[in-house]
Image 1: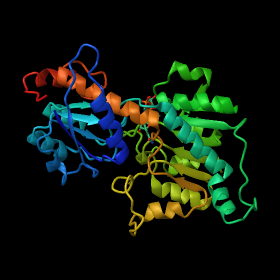
Image 2: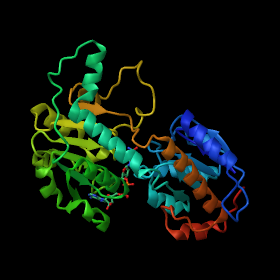
Image 3: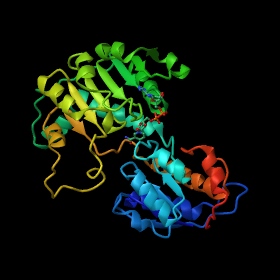
Image 4: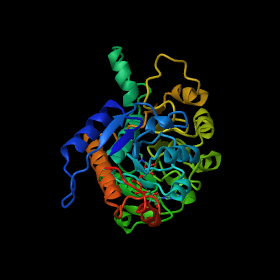
Length: 352
Ligand code: NAI
């Protein structure tokens, strides 16, 4: 089967090629012979024709899977969308379902990878190690401006306690933090670490707030003028989830006024078209991003919280398992579309 892989960086090519070449199918299935074509650019309306001849495409967080793109892919004969990520806010699922497309994600490749990175960002900002690193390299050993706070005894708010939020709770317990969480669907597993409260109750009490809920209509701009005003003065905000959770204009205002004590981002509202590419020789046109970069108490990373060897291995292996389910026309536990799509697909040819 031909698979067009979009946004394929050298590390994706390495891990996917390894898993698709050396794996021989799950237990009682014959191996799938997959021919991978790697494109290092993203999928969008202009690049759809590159999927010509492929029955499946493999995509990542900033690929565009709008109705227009899905219809174009379907017309080319693509029948399966394999996401190499957990979040699927970039996929028009109703259109995919209407077209009878198989869509599957990798729901959990390494919650610890993201939780550990959130903690790394939080402590970098809190203890100013990003500034210390540069100073010491210049021979400046002055400590002015590097004062931090102990995590021990502080209150940390986790917004969204799923796999990643829970992994962060486990880590923060080791630091001796008091944990508060907001999640409309509470998990019993969190109750041994802390207490569920409303978002309105959480924000004024927390010294640090970390976002771990998915991006949906309900959570878009969950951090805005109103919720920022509710936060404790001087609190640090960490977002390793999705950029759209934060209204960028509002955090800039809160940083300028000094109400927000620091901001650590691994994701950014308008990261598509910027992240995962080298723009160092260009003039970046996004004025809000560039303004954020001027604050000494802001750290921005390019969506790398997931980026560990363990996570890349699981992403490649889970993508392979999802493809096996598609080819075998059996239930896929990571399917994002209704089972009826699989049934409808039984009448379609599958080229293996
Ligand atoms: P999950 O599905 O296990 O947990 C998400 C939690 O958010 C659930 O408990 C859910 O009930 C909760 N939630 C839903 N609506 C909410 C709301 N309105 N307010 C607060 N909480 C709400 O997902 P997981 O695996 O923990 O991942 C969380 C997010 O992390 C993903 O949606 C993805 O956007 C992001 N992510 C980022 C990565 C990175 O490299 N930066 C890598 C992997 C995931």
